[in-house]
Image (tube, rainbow, N blue to C red; front, top):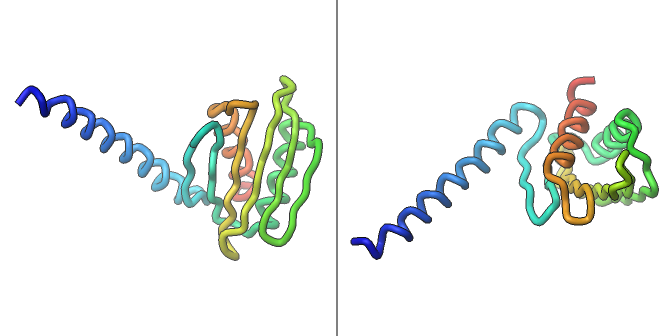
Length: 132
């Protein structure tokens, strides 16, 4: 029986970790966010908003929180903003059209990723989209 305890404990821990991710998706839905995940230094967010509304709200957000935009480019279904934060860390924000009312946004702060800073930007974009 001792042989099976470690895999069982690992299974329970991984199962609970999945619930935490699911809770993030459920909590986000009520606030205009379909879901989000942080993976390999990048925060992926799906906003319940059209592509161009999300693009414009991101620009307003970056100006409001005093992040300097270095370059920006978008087409019909994708886009990218490169910026520099107050501490000169690079910020890369990518956009992908999902549907007429959903846009995927990828946020990476720094070379390796800064989860806290990415979550702050995500929340500021959400406020700009749904509370202003």
